[in-house]
Each structure stands twice: as C-alpha cells, then as structure tokens.
Length: 306
Image 1: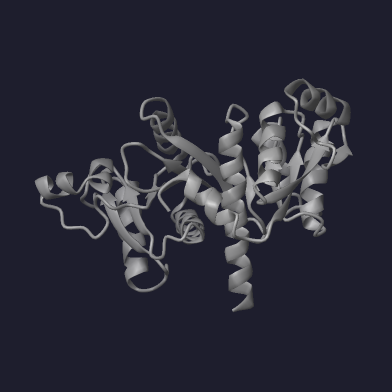
Image 2: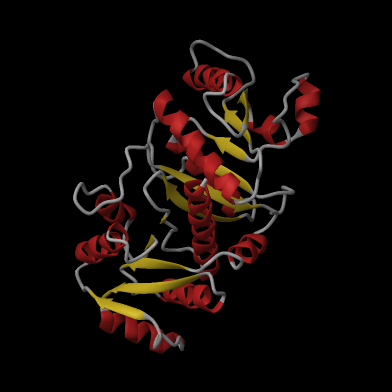
C-alpha cells in the first residue's frame, strides 16, 4: 500500500467492524462515522450527549437515523461506556471523539472494564508523505514519554504488527539517533544496537532492524552512500522508532505542517485497536484510522485461527 486510499480500499475487503465512539458530539467524528458506514468498513455506535449529537448532525446535514446512539452526557462516563462495550464484546474497537486522550486512556487502562493485555501500549502513527514513495509508520509520538529499552522492544513489535496489517510483509525498521555510530554516552544509540542484535538473534521477529541511523540515512539511500554506511534499511524505512516523545512529536508535527503529510494514529497493545486521532483531524484522517483498525483486527483474527 502506498496511500491512504489504498488503506481504505483494502479495509473494504474485510468484514465490517463495530466501533464505539467515546463522546461523539463532534462534526468531523460523525462525518467519519457516516463515511465508514457508507464504505462498508465499520458501523458506529455514537456514545455521548444525544441532544448535541442530534443538533450537530442536523446542522451538518448528516443522516444518523440508522446509527445506534447511547445518551451519556457526562464525558468520563461516555468514555467508560465506549470502552466497556468493547470489553463486553458489544463493539470491536473504540475511537476517541470530542474528549482528551487521557480520559479515554484512563478508561482503557481501568482494571475492571479496560482493555489491558499486559503488553506495553504505544502510539503508532501512519503517514502518507508527498516526499516519500510509500506509507511510513512512526512511534511513539503520543504515549510513552521516555521509554525504557524494554518498552522500546514492545514499541517495535506493536509497530511491526501495524505494518504487517498494512500488507508490508517484512517491515524495515530504522532506530533513529543523531548519528550512525553507537556512542556509550548516547542511550538512543546503545538501545538501537541492542534492538538490532535482538532482531538478528530472532528475539524480535518478522522485520529487519537497523540502527542507530540518523534520520537522513533512514530516508535517503544517497545520504547513506555519501557517508559510506551500508544498511538494509537506509532509504527504505517503513517504520521510524524515535527515542522519546519530544523527538517523535516534533517530527510528527513537522511532517504535517512543513512536509504536507497526511497522518493518522492509533494506540496499539490493548486487546483491540484504540483510535486516538487529534480532535483537529479531518473526517478523512478519522476514516483512515478506522480503516487501519479494521485491518489490524482482521490480522489479529487470522493469527488466532492459525
């Protein structure tokens, strides 16, 4: 797949899923729900203030007569209800609406009704950039502040699972640092070296990892040749792994505002995909996020059957 359109097209081939939207009183969210249903990707349950949902839908001319709407005006309770629906098997995934991320994540991590699996949860962004010839993934711009090495292992595994769901058979993973050499004083470079060795020994499977790599090498074969670096990942990276949330979030926003990239993101590592787009994202970005979630759910079902 090379574009968001490809993601949506592939998701159409899968059985539709049910997505519970937490605090659904938002125009772009309702529009995305309508588009998901019309594309046969997912059926939405709108959880939130029913009066506001009806008002916003009417103002925007969106027909929600065939949607299930659950009236829950309290924001915290709406988030919990959406997550609880997934926990009880009434929905297949949860999506953030007009609510901040910590409120949804608090419900996701709840011991009684949450979606924890014991794995590290991480944010995986998927972006389509006019300057790159393929879809690219990045982690972690929204969840782990300063991940430990153990957390980075799970972050890589989570991102690889998303990549494989997007039909990238053997994802190439670049562990980003400021340069290409391991420096004992730079944790990011040491972690990169250890991640590479784990992949080499089969402790991290289904991918090719190289690092440390500076960003220019990960994205450009010419830069790698100029620096004399031989790498199976240079210029072909499918996944970028950043050292901390500051670096990842800056890159995320630079890609959007300076590079003109389309971008979307999910939380991975829970029992189901948690669609955690920005409230400022367009309905298209939200539609693509649901499509990614559908492909992930389909991949998980295939693995269970094996």
